[in-house]
Length: 394
Image (cartoon, rainbow, N blue to C red; front, side):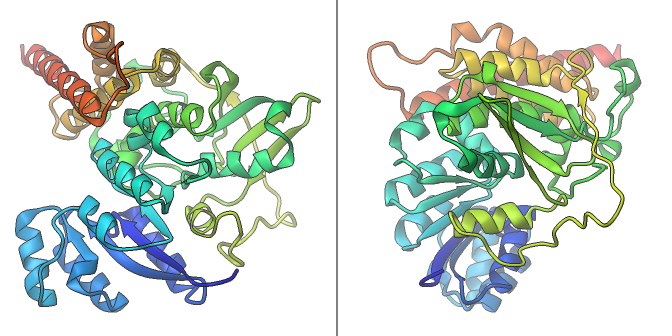
């Protein structure tokens, strides 16, 4: 594979970040960590990681001020206070952005500006940033980490882009597959956290339960591969073995299949375009197994339909979708709204988005434009959540 790749990991204490560190530890002749960044919810974990990796304080970033002071004291020097500062100061071949939420957008843009390869797990930054991100990135600079988009990238090696007819995203269906809206009315955060096939962080798990995650992935695929949203199908595949498919004009469909584990797409993104030997165990076709597919229930789970609409609208509408979801999801986790009302809030905010989600017509959109659109979407989502919460108490 050539020289050792220098890697910075943003979100090092989260689910993707910790698995990435395991992949790197298993392949010391291939990768070396030269920087880590974390929000600061677990400063002891950051200190432990930094010491195990032999990092200097200047190679560490912690967002929360109190946690940053604690980590700085433990490491004997001042750490960076934000991920963008670390990205700009620490040279790297590849930066893995595994931050959670659209707060990762600034880091995504910072990585692009350095010229490093961006291994993107923080789908929200591409969804929210849209053309601002794709316009600034060099061809091939962004490499997908999501299992579905990694699968698409692998399937695309089987033909030319002109030969592609359709893309197919697979969805497990989440823990409430087959449920009606009424049956999901009393779902608790604990129940929503019980994903049937994947082990993920809290927000990604909740987004998978509402299928907002699949909506975000549809938008991400449209932007990452520059394809019309109408050419992206979503099918429910409960076993989570096939991660995505690409259908070609001759009728052939190429699928990427592997056991549900993030280590394969993480390793593939870090080593792209090469592969990491033994990244995970392969499927054993000597064992009996069943792969099933079924249509998505858009009535019970309207999040994907909404996402397709905002992907087609473009401009700031995907940022509205994501921001409204982040506010509504937080409200559900705090017990202020019901599970089905998460997507209700998204739909309500989108209904009025024509008032604020369009980009300026006389210039290219900027990072500040996205932040302003997100801010208004969050304000409206918060207002709607308050109304729903008040209504439930009557």
